[in-house]
Image 1 (cartoon, rainbow, N blue to C red):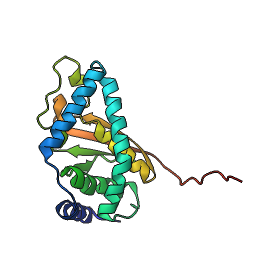
Image 2 (cartoon, rainbow, N blue to C red):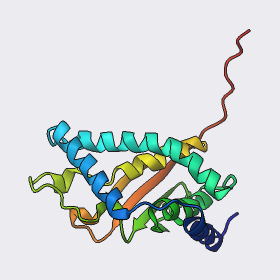
Image 3 (tube, rainbow, N blue to C red):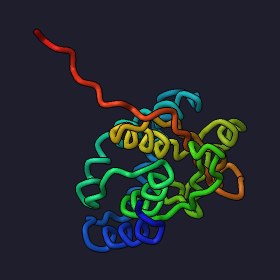
Image 4 (tube, one colour):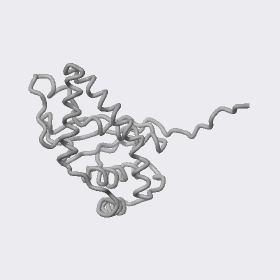
Length: 192
């Protein structure tokens, strides 16, 4: 099992040596433009915007995991706790240069929270002042989809959702991740 310190060291090493860096402000502003366009396209139906962000993230996550595995050389995690540490200390570090805190484990070790002290996707953001966005829009919901897509590609079906967001006036930004099941490798049906 990779220790927390080892995962943090891997994340830091990969960030420093194997990642092509992109200007953070460019990413933040581009993402903000995507969210604003979705709000326009769906007439400020924030429930639908959340679904679309999750769907986009899921598709990104399914491809991002390949890059993650290639850059880190990480093997299979031995349990869900180790997976949480790799997601936090390595995945978030190499792709967003932040390291969320892994906390609030359930007694069966099938649920945990990622608490972000800073969310680079939310820099320079003000939610629409229409009386609804503050309660309905999860601006960074693409992250939940990315987590679902990436973990599904390594045989873990999870549910991920925001619990709180600084943009909504909460004290912290928290994503809750729940393991639904481990996906068994399925053999294609015999063509004989």
